[in-house]
Length: 167
Image (cartoon, rainbow, N blue to C red):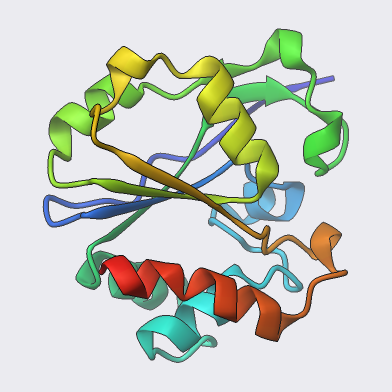
């Protein structure tokens, strides 16, 4: 099994909110883009919340996040995993991203939203409390992954509205 690597964060100096996934799925890794699977609801949800065209190009969509003060990254820097499911991540192989350095460079971030349970549990388990601000507010949101199809788009939109409440 090959070691998989995540992407660099999408963030600028104006970021106030960080959205964290666990590790990109295979479609995203193949495309070199966050949330590239055609059935992942991340971009449709963000498009609705931030009022941009969900069919816009990747650069336009990521620019809309940055303009809204939202950064995007993954908890894991690397891991081995069969397929795309978080449940298949081999825990002995995972490495987390350098959050101490990230938060040093993005001092305005005070809210972290996790895209699903795996991102939240990995962050809380593997990222040292000394590596992020003591007053950081963390909230788990329902996963936008197609593997979480039991929850409707409407349900996810309502839950993800919390991002706009702190923006």
